[in-house]
Image 1 (cartoon, one colour):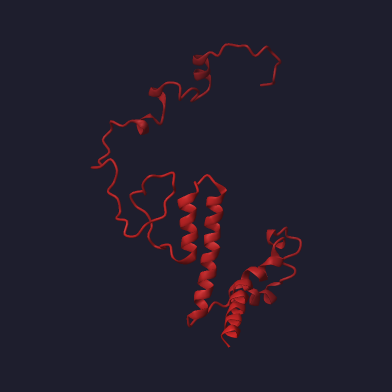
Image 2 (cartoon, rainbow, N blue to C red; image 1 turned 180 degrees about the vertical axis):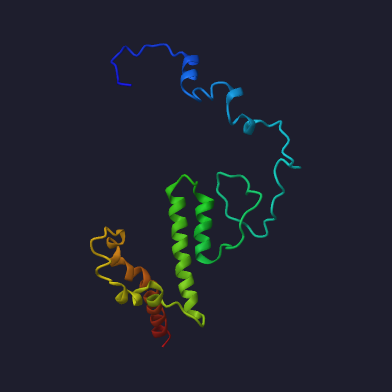
Length: 185
């Protein structure tokens, strides 16, 4: 139907629109609303509780300051520990989820956790191998230069930082160990 310039002051004929357009005005009358059964509270659900029994909180959990209680079931696989746990606790205890500081602290906590894991691996019998884990050894066999040129790859912008991110924590830890060793002599 082409556009016709008019005064746009026409009165809406609801019944005419309902007859002409399938589903028009479905939410005007609650009796016609498809989601009304979902919104009813008097239907039998079969649940014997209004809020399910809560999982026991064996150690203190991080929780947003917006929520007064934890959900009934929550994960306990990765409890907070070390400096990364302290950073995450700070994010949850001080900042709302609507603040950038909350999320930036959580990202920092993830980075600190990665550094702690790298440091822990140096002490263990199987240290990390950043060269092999980065896939650099497979590069010569897989057309390294041709695969990077002309494909609008997003990683080209930050490729110069990859060695710093991968090897930086290891180099820093080795430097700190050497400095500590020199001070004790």
